[in-house]
Image 1 (spheres, rainbow, N blue to C red):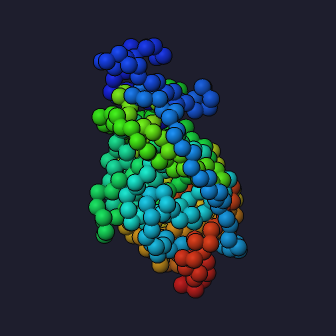
Image 2: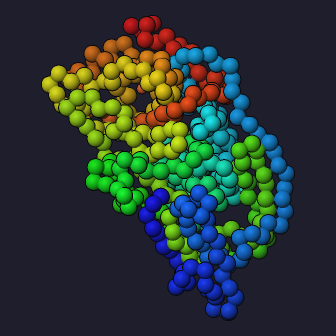
Length: 388
Ligand SMILES: [Fe+2]
């Protein structure tokens, strides 16, 4: 995120002695991207953030592709079982070198802390309420929120309710930074007037009272090819102040202002985030195209350079039949797709849509996992002929 934030207590300048009331020094931590050239924040801790007391087990893990063949898919992600917490409950569905797409239906909040060492994360909250707790502070979340958690952030996800109110989350891991679309930013990084959302729509964590606790604080660290358990001897949320441009943030899909036109607008107008190798788009409630002869449903299209994953969040999705809340469709590059039978001509004259969906378009082919294939609706690939 490119806009500067400051919270809590800070020394007058960077890198000078900053003491507590009893004379002890605070410990400054610089967290920066692209070496020392990208966005960064300075955090001021009560204790050194380097105090690992135990390096636990390393468990190797690699995403494994299933033999799936080539074709359109409908993945019934709502049928995935409930298990684990925000981290251990992840069910990988699709992946490539740039991005991994998981679904999580947790049954418990996190006990341990978590840090993704090699990927930035984007969490779409399909259902459930709770709080993202980080060393930068806490951020409340609601259904429809996107949480952007850059790598390096030590965090924990707490849920407001147990049982029926447990969350359903779509989690995207990105090998590069997840950012606002470049074309909406001015030369100073500010979101411009034509952007569908702006800084005022973005929520940042609120710093909590620093925790001065000694003991055993396990942190699960996600690495490219495995998991490392580290145990710190101080509570990681011992920050008295921070400032800078590297921090987690939230944005609600309900604050995305749709761009509409007289005739069908390309998915580009729905773009919400960008990263190297993929984009994320939000399809929200909006008036339909208003040319008197407009066809509001999308024209069949072949994106020969992108794989498309669409997650159906709620509402009636205008171009699809047989799709439910939390369905995921996959359309591989080069294979034409478009409205289901009856939906193309049937859209003429319609005035608005209440659809809510999240699209991930990747620029390299995606592989599907065995867990994804296990909940596939195998009728979908031929549904343009069979249903017609
Ligand atoms: Fe498409």
